[in-house]
Amino acid sequence: MFISFWQLFLTNFRMLYRNWRGLFFNIFLPVFLYLAISKISGNAPGSHTVTYSEYLLPGIIAMTIMQTGIFSLAYWLVDLKARGVIKRLLVTPLSNFEMLGSLIASRLVLMAIQIGLIISIGVWYFKTSIPGSGLAIVLLMLMGGAVFLGIGFAVSSFAKTYEEAAPITTILNLLFTFLGNIFFPTENFPTVLKFIASKLPVTYLAEGMRNNFIQDWTLKQTLPDLLGLGAWLLVVIVILSYTAKLKQD
Image 1 (tube, one colour):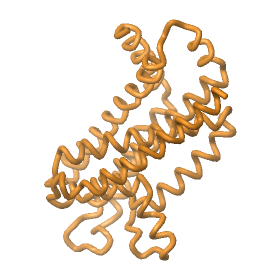
Image 2: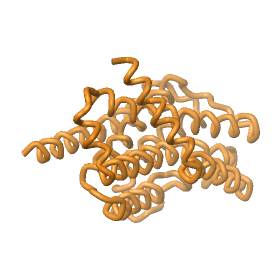
Image 3: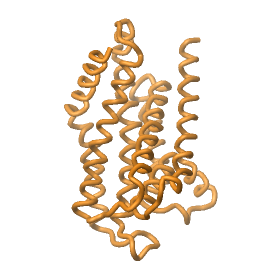
Image 4: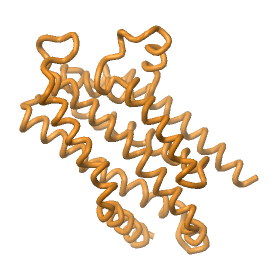
């Protein structure tokens, strides 16, 4: 079982890094955005002590986790489904755990590489310090990765082709990016938008990490954001269970 899982993991990971177009959008584009926006900006909005590069770093990490989870997994599964690869895999001795686990593991490794690269640039180039809880940051990233990978699975469950998946992922990306406290705070938004923004999973992820990246927050102080991500993870699991039940029926 472990050998099959490892072989599938290596196959998925090789296909990820051999896809130069996907590699650009998954790794180089977030790094470029972080460097470019940090260079042309001064202090963070509403602060004279926090630089914009410090404010932006956790937001870019949250955006990277979000886009890798949703885009990378959703499009990949939709493509496999459209080409009939998943049907052929289902008649093999491979278990669902091996197939899904290898997909998730390869994306988590990709996320780790992305996050490590972005944090390295922030710490070494922009001299950003991280005074908060390292454990809280790791838990936030793991929970965030689980939520957005789950959303990617959900999109692939509803969409049969790339043309069906593209509008869904585009809407989610616009909603999460502009209302998720990634590039700017949403506290001055109209009441309705402010309420929606505060409940998005990417907001819990970005704000939880920002509090630990900029301030010396503890794991206990980060619990509300972790619980928010946990609630979203439960919602995603329920949706995936429902779609699986529909397919069985």
